[in-house]
Image 1 (cartoon, protein in one colour):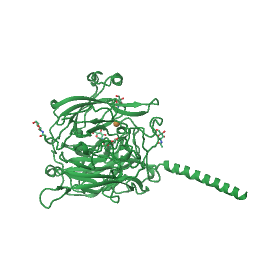
Image 2 (tube, rainbow, N blue to C red):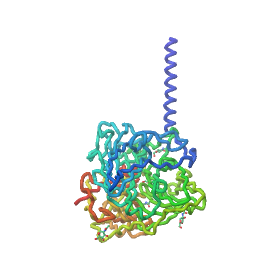
Image 3 (cartoon, protein in one colour):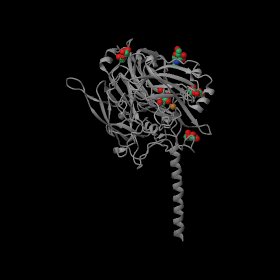
Image 4 (cartoon, rainbow, N blue to C red):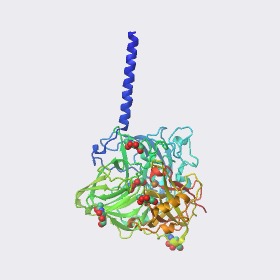
Length: 579
Ligand SMILES: *[C@@H]1O[C@H](CO)[C@@H](O)[C@H](O)[C@H]1NC(C)=O
Ligand SMILES: *[C@@H]1O[C@H](CO)[C@@H](O)[C@H](O)[C@H]1NC(C)=O
Ligand SMILES: *[C@@H]1O[C@H](CO)[C@@H](O)[C@H](O)[C@H]1NC(C)=O
Ligand SMILES: *[C@@H]1O[C@H](CO)[C@@H](O)[C@H](O)[C@H]1NC(C)=O
Ligand SMILES: CC(=O)N[C@H]1CO[C@H](CO)[C@@H](O)[C@@H]1O
Ligand SMILES: [Cu+2]
């Protein structure tokens, strides 16, 4: 009897202890690091490893090099005082993999071949949602991934279509998967690109987990004469994103959806508390008192940034997204939507102080959301050396001028309406373009080599950065919609901009396009309640040569909103070029 009692007592003790363990585990799991507990500006700004995708020949032209880049699960230190964080990282080995991944350097005219290799285990480190259209391997083994080179002008087979995903060892592949080794032509204008995951329904979490990296195309013949700051020390990519962490260091993402009965996990926008630059939270960099070039890539899921320097230093824009501007443009602040790229020269010799904080004051969601706080209002710190240096770099008056868009050459006009749908509790459930899911038949079928006018109509509450694969575009005009509710009601009923008299409604206030965004872009902010008119060119901007690949091949391209949480559910449509 005594023994039975003793066993029962021990058993009850065990149960009680287990319950305490489980609930404390659940508590720690949800307990978040308060960003104010992390001291700012204690980690040095890292430079990501560089991978050259060409071999310098002893004499003659450089030769293409074949690269193998893997995706690995590993741990990454985001801050001196934060425990190592489980991440997914790109790299040539698990040991060398980084967040963001290595910076790939390509040369204009020299092809790059990359075999992207998935080494990820089966269980994702972040919550995902099977109720939105999602890549789910049949055997439920492995995490689907596929790499898109953002800004690349490349064949459809290498464009990283959301359904061309693959799991570890290519054991399972998505319905449009065709090949292991991607071919990047690098025949386009020099500029800034970035590579990131694009798997159906998983893009937001695969990027949050760390799958992003910079890719630069250089063209020495046209860039060297500009004498812009160059070399590893003075020409640096800054990959910026926001993340929240638990006290154990892991990345925190809310695992409860905003409409849990419809989508158990999906939420319309991810915002993190800590601002990360090149893989460190609020890093610092010691700068010499001279010019630097920074290629600032906004790799956040949904956060917009309006950057400015606390000491009045200015941004000299030399390029935007993947293309140079015709002339430099000086601003004291710069608004960057997710996936947009600002390519700027900062002249630290103009600094009146020895410290400059790069700060951010964009509300989130942009533009109608909460103001920033101390944590997400600071980005990084520059400590500027006392002595002014002789600067051999300059910013020329003329950069690289591409032909201006020729409206009369546009072969057709399209209307692209952005819709948001809400549940009976008035929470967004999903977003569609033109009222169509991704699976519906392709409707945007431009002819290769032509240009088209697209009128993008924002019928939602948010600013959506629209990204078009393959094509580059110029923003022509942004007009507020008058009698918006009438127009919205008509569109909700008929989904037909012409029938709803778009020309009568697109008569409101004009919104000026910022000077530094008047060049060729691949992402632009579609202001809510406005019609944004763009001219999209489905050919190179620097020459009239046709593409050196078949742009009409399967599986075609896509265009989508670059708020990743929107793209996943499913603010994305197919784009199929025809001959
Ligand atoms: C997670 O999201 C749900 C649904 O929107 C919300 O009720 C909850 O407060 C969120 N949790 C945290 C920790 O923010
Ligand atoms: C970065 O990109 C995200 C999403 O693509 C966007 O929401 C955010 O505002 C952008 N931030 C900056 C600074 O551009
Ligand atoms: C930038 O300049 C504009 C116009 O000169 C001014 O309104 C704005 O407040 C300035 N912003 C900052 C951050 O200094
Ligand atoms: C392409 O051809 C047109 C018409 O001949 C010409 O105006 C334009 O400058 C050319 N574009 C480039 C990039 O050479
Ligand atoms: C940010 C913004 O201006 N969003 C607008 C998008 O369009 C809707 C209506 O079409 C407006 O209500 C939003 O204010
Ligand atoms: Cu969007």
